[in-house]
Length: 44
Image 1 (cartoon, one colour):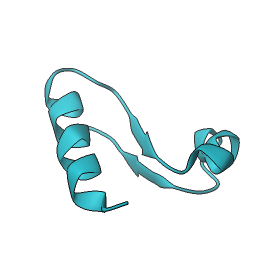
Image 2: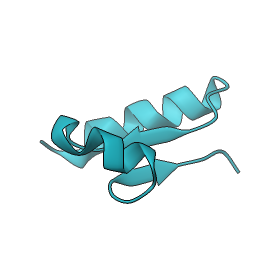
Image 3: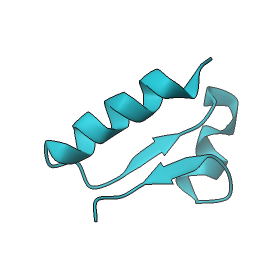
């Protein structure tokens, strides 16, 4: 799907104190958690 809503939700999560956001498909979740794929967003 569109990245726009995912990015907006990620920003809200980080602004409310979240430490890390990972955006990935469910079938690649394990690789995304290990930092091998997907999009990661951190505060800063």
